[in-house]
Image (cartoon, rainbow, N blue to C red; front, top):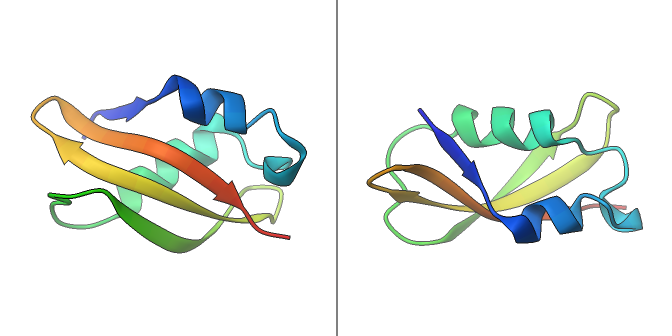
Length: 74
């Protein structure tokens, strides 16, 4: 499945709260969600390669899975 990353996500990954979460972590998390996501939904409890917990908000479009934002956990 194609994963579409918004500019907002790219900006958020540069913030301190998301430190330790990389673009590859977000893509892998989006690909690991089974089924179809018809409306924007928050998915919790992903772990980055660096061990950082994070959530993502995603929605399926005709062109792929859109990741709207990422939320790092302290």
